Image 1 (cartoon, rainbow, N blue to C red):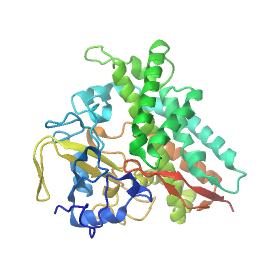
Image 2: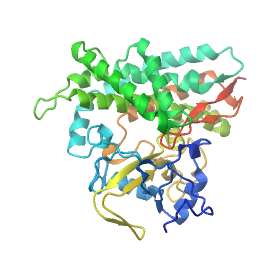
Image 3: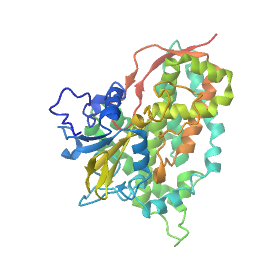
Image 4: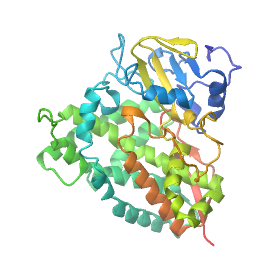
Length: 411
């Protein structure tokens, strides 16, 4: 069933390539319809669709998992006669250079080296520092009648964490996150996107050069100087710059979305916060439910490397295909009561961190940040309530709140 969204106003499917359609949060109504009626949907191009090309939309959990695990037929790089590829709707000429926009064997080569920095020991060493940072952030707002949780906590904690991982000096951190905000939180992200990415890339060149000259006790220094076991080679400066420009925005923004979304969920389902306060053993399942519920990275794109039949239709070689992880995490075919936030949900095989060879590199770091935050909130507060209307980022790739004014509750 191919529906032209540009001419058929009766279909509930909105223009998914238009960031403005995500300014009120994720459009669940459209995806509920897609899962039921058009699990493989051809999205015609509109005036704002990148590259002027249509793309396939995949919305069901089982299909999303299958595509994530089939990198042979669904490429993160490019296929056919494309000069660009990548994981967003827009073609990226840099596809084939960045970790998330490569396929094996190059992806496996990159990942083997980067994993030398992201060891469990390196991540675990951050936990005490994160807990101390959270306490300082909460101390700063303790006397306020209400405060913006996003700017006070959800933005600051991931920022400081990813900067510590990458060895970014304190004096540079604020500027970096402002550049990220310009691209992701602005009302017209597509216009500003290139400007902020170029600035971050230029900074990446500077810090990579610094880590080569003066390595420090941080994960980026480890990666800069790590050698491939096969031939003793290292990542080149362009490869390292691509790694930095991937990891910094991803680390700063996705966890921000998860933390802000977690508090919003506990406001909407206050009994779940009380349950977690009474039973800390539920922390592990609570963290996973936060990731499922918030799914900060909404979709990924792949490019078909051959003709593929699915749901009675043919995805052709070179076609763009998007799979929507937020939709998969609300699929009633897989999850019981998917629109209920339930910290008892276990097992919780969500796709909020991806699946297959491109499973999130920073998964353990993200889980730790959420764990530390939930634990700190449970220790200090009895609940939360909104003190204003939440403001969502108008972005179809990263789901999150720009602002959420709250009051904390204490008995």
